Structure formats: structure tokens, C-alpha cells
Image (cartoon, rainbow over all chains, first blue to last red; front, side, top):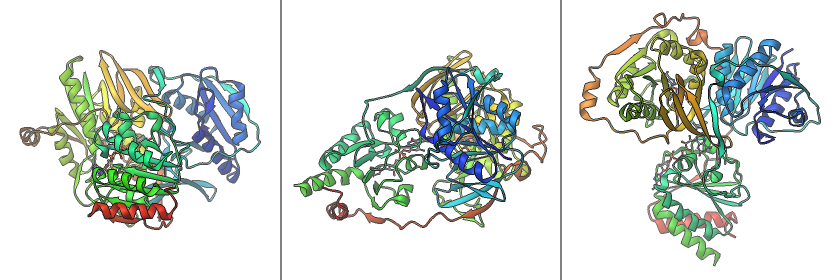
Amino acid sequence: MTDILVYALHYEGAFNKNSLGAVSEAARLASQIGGEAHAVVVGEGVTDDLAAQLGDYGATRVFRAEGPEGLAQPVVDAMAKVIGDRGHGYALFGGGLLGFEIGAGLAARMNAGVVMEVTQVNVEDGKLVSERPILGDSSISQVRYEGDLGIIIGRLNAFEAKTSGGTAAVQDIVVEYQAFSTSARMVKRGEQRGADINIEDAKVLIAGGRGLGKAEGFGLLDDLAAAFGGAAVAATRAVVDAGWFPYAGQIGQTGKTVAPKLYLAAGISGAIQHKVGMQASENIVAINKDANAPIFEFSDLGIVGDLNKIVPKLTAAVKAKKG
Amino acid sequence: MKICVLVKEVPDAAVQKRLVNGRMDRGGERNLNPYDTHAIEEAVRIKEAGVVTVDEVVAVSMGPESADRAIRKAISLGVDRAVHLCDEAVAGSDVAATGLALARTLERESPDLVLLGQQSDDGECYTIGAVVADHLKMPSLTQVIKMDVREGTLICERQAEYGYDTVEIPTPAVISVGDAINEPRYPSLKAIMGAKKKPVDKVTISDVGLDASQVGELGSKARWFRSAAPPEKAAGEIIEDEDTNATVERIVAWLDERKLIS
Ligand SMILES: Cc1cc2nc3c(=O)[nH]c(=O)nc-3n(C[C@H](O)[C@H](O)[C@H](O)COP(=O)(O)OP(=O)(O)OC[C@H]3O[C@@H](n4cnc5c(N)ncnc54)[C@H](O)[C@@H]3O)c2cc1C
Ligand SMILES: Nc1ncnc2c1ncn2[C@@H]1O[C@H](COP(=O)(O)O)[C@@H](O)[C@H]1O
């Protein structure tokens, strides 16, 4: 019997969609290897109601620990305790950021193998095999685990959340936290920098990156979005971190996941962490001056050229076409 | 205060990375991982700012002989000296084994602050920091884009799943920095020449208290055993912009065909 332990991230009374996906994936895999899917929740006053929700996604047991939120190391302590007591064979995480830190910390603590950016998990001879795309997604590595524990960190949106109608027993655990795990203090969490814009409902998204050169470069994209009518403007982490664009309009691993009818990128390289948030778009158009930019690998139409020359003329042409 | 910066040699970005018989082709030009220059720059800035007294900035690297070049580059960017864990036994280490080997190498230096880049250009795990921190029993944070250094404590900002977090962390600590944290400077010619003469302390796994069963392929619990091709995807259409009016006409026609301009 091999059980799988999942970390379920929650914030402001709701679980992260990627964590729910991880719970569903763990339930699917556990049924194939004759075990159960369990989950760990760490937080300040996590309610029975919230913890029990994981049952509906396939967890049979939820271990609830009182502890600080938003930091990885306390969760490593909690998961190490549960695995130490119960001997789970695998630990599974959804995509995002905290799961990467927790999974890697747990690998160090438990002397276990870890694979990140996993897009698929298969069962071979009763054991889990992780598939990780590498080299700009041009090849897929298949990896097995040696030893008592294998750690799988999913890529963003790799695992789909599915409700099963099941129920979970919620069990409180007492964790003796390591001094170093609890020495960091969250001063402010989840600050929304910039305006509260909506990019998830737009049918057309015009996205900009560092290639715009400066914050004012977004003016070109606003004009193009206006020409399309009803289009929204979005961005990469690079320009959000630089303060050029609001966080609410960021696409990717630590931002939004979108799937518009048309996604048009200007001055975006197409890093994996951006791609995972927009690859389900129906039509992908990219303008980039570097013919080797990774974004051309997953564009339906790629234009190699200077956005400063192309975008204004495109705006005028779209306007003219619409009449 | 002593700052250690973890630096790695990676294939040059200009080199087309590829697989040969399922393994990463290690040939071609190699250089300092560009993301690590941000960690070096931050260490140098902390030293220059003088809010805390920095006695030394030490680069620590694990890699083959050829990594010496990347290490010299790190020195030219302002690192005072370097430690190079160079041992055939570490070849083929997975993330956990790499982190263990780096942690043991760092332990000998007793750093007050360990800085890393946000990701290695070839490995792309963005997690070595978390592995190293657990072994060193230090608090840790990755993807930090602003760090306010005070005596005994760091105020860090980073973007996580729900927005920007501000976290206060006591030192000693392990911090990986995002590329938005600073704009690394270019080395002066004098610094490049000087870096050739700076001492690089070459160590083996036994020097850092490890044996061959703990690192390399032997010590790695995540075992690559097969490569597969990703699902075939029709290649997209490419337009090289020569005459922008013609380019724009083609884009509009393409969009119109798909009823994307309504
Ligand atoms: C843990 C983690 C999480 C992350 N989360 C996210 C996330 O949620 N979202 C995200 O987007 N990124 C995320 N990133 C960052 C990601 O790895 C990339 O660094 C980022 O997406 C790059 O943004 P960019 O394309 O704007 O910039 P760059 O990579 O610098 O690309 C700029 C592009 O503009 C082109 N260009 C320059 N000038 C012109 C011009 N005049 N005309 C046309 N093209 C031009 C260049 O050729 C280049 O390709 C994350 C990284 C990590 C490690
Ligand atoms: N072999 C290595 N030697 C020294 N530092 C490394 C090594 N591998 C990774 N790092 C550090 O860890 C950071 C993150 O790398 P990764 O987790 O591989 O994406 C890099 O930016 C480096 O600072």
C-alpha cells in the first residue's frame, strides 16, 4: 500500500486551484497503486469546513496543522512529520511557487528525489514515473524514484481539479517546528500592486513584455487593444516586477491563467513560466525582433521584427478593417 | 558579515541547447549563468552600501574543470575569492544531491548570507536555494526582488501566488534573487585581468565531508531513464518583417481569415 501526500495551499478561505488539481491527481494515481490520497493543510485557524472540502477532490484524510501561512519551511516540517509517522511513498504538489520551495526542502529533509515542472505522471510496474519537459519543451525526460519517498512538483495547470463526491476525515496534528523554519515573519502578504484590471474575461488579449523598453511602451498596446474593441492588455512578470504594469494583469506561473480567442504578444520572449499561463489560447500571435525567441516555438503566427515599427501600423490597419 | 554567492557554469545562451543520446550536450561555449550575476551584484551592493560591514564576498560553485572560466567571470564582477567543488564524483547529481554538495561546501565558510540566482539557464529548477537552506538549517526565500539589509535581519519582497509578499528574515539566511532586483554592472578591463590572478580554492567531495555514495548518479534518487518526444504540433507561420506595410497587410489577412477582427 502506497499513499500519496499532497500539500494544499489556501488563501483567504479558499484552496488554490492547482492544489485541488494535485489532490485529484493524487487520488487518480493512488487508486492505481493501491493507496490513498492524503493532504496537509497548514494555517492559522483553518476551519473544519475548509479542510473537509479536499474530500470532494479525492483526499480521504486531511492533516491539519496550526502554523504560519504563506511560508514554505513550516510546511516542510509538517509534511516531514506526517510522512515520518505514516510512511507515504510520494509527495505531490501543484504548480505555483510555494510548492516548489516546500517540495525541494522536503527532498533535502527526507533524502528523497524530486522532479519539478512535471506535466504528467504515469504508473509503471506499480511505481510513479514523472515526465518533465526540458530544453524549452523540446524533449520530455522520464524520471523514476529510488528510495522510500519520491517528490513530484507539477507545472502550473498540469493537473485538473475534479470533484469526486468523496469525503475526508480531518485530523489535527501537532508539529514541533524547527527554529529556522519559523524564524521568518510575514509582514505583508498578497499585496496587489497597481490597478485592479480584468484580463480573464477578454476575448482578445494584447500582451507586452520587456521588449516594450519602458512603461510608456504600453501606450502602443492600449491603442491596439482599443482598435480591436473590447480587448484587454496583459503583461509578463518582468514588466510587473519593474512597476510598468499592474500585477492583476500578469499572465503566468505566479499570475493569471488565460485562454482568449486571440493572444497577441509584443516584446515577450516566451519563457516557460509565461507560457504555462497562456498556452491554451486559441490563436497565438507573437511579434519579437529575435528570430530565436522561444515564443515562436508555440505561436500560430510569428512576426520577426521591431514592435515599435509594426504595432502602430497594425493598429491603423485593424481600425481601417473594422471601418 | 560574510556573503557567499552560488554561481554556476551553463551553456551559453547563444548555443542551441540539445540532447545527444538522451543526455544534455555539454559541448559548445559555456559561461556564467546570467541569473547569477544579479546575486553577485546584490552582494557587491550590500558591501558598498556599508549599512552592515561585509568582510568578504565568496563565490561557491560546483562543476567541472571548465567552470573555472565562469568563476573568474564572477570574480571580475566583484567577488573577493572563490571555492570550486570540482570532483568527477558529482557528475550527474540531481537537484537534491547538488543542493547537498553545495550545502556541505558552504558549511566550511560559515556564511551569514547565501545568495543564489533565480534559476539556472540549463537546469531551470529554481529550487536549489530551498534544498541548501534545509541542510544549513537556515530560513530561506526564493525569487526576492527587493532586499533591505539591516544588522541581523533582512526585509525581503517577492511575488508569490497571490501578489507581493514582504517577509522579514533573520540572518544567517539563504536567499535566491529574481532578475528584477538590480541591473548588474559590466566588469572593467582591469577587473577582468585581475580576476585571472585571484585565488580559487579547489576542493573535492572528501574535503567537504561527503563520499561518492551521496552525490552524482549514485547519490541521486531521481533517476532519468528515458526521453520522449513532445506531441507533434504544426509549426506556426513566420513573417520576416522587411516591408512593414506588407507585413501588416499579411497579419490583418491572417486575423481576418480566423474572424478575429469583428
Ligand atoms: C518561479 C518563477 C515564476 C515566474 N512567474 C512568471 C509569471 O507568472 N509570468 C511571467 O511572465 N514570467 C514569470 N517568470 C519570469 C520568466 O521566467 C521570464 O523571466 C519572463 O516571463 C520574461 O519576461 P519578458 O518576456 O517580458 O522579458 P524578456 O525575457 O527579457 O524578453 C523580452 C523580449 O523582447 C524582445 N524585444 C526587445 N526589443 C524588441 C523590439 N523593439 N521589438 C520586438 N521585440 C523586442 C526580445 O527579443 C526578447 O525576446 C517567473 C520566473 C520564475 C523563476
Ligand atoms: N552547480 C551549481 N553550483 C553553484 N551554484 C548552483 C549550481 N546549480 C545551481 N546553483 C545556484 O542555484 C540557483 C538556482 O538554480 P536552479 O535551482 O538549478 O534553477 C542558480 O542561479 C545558482 O545560484
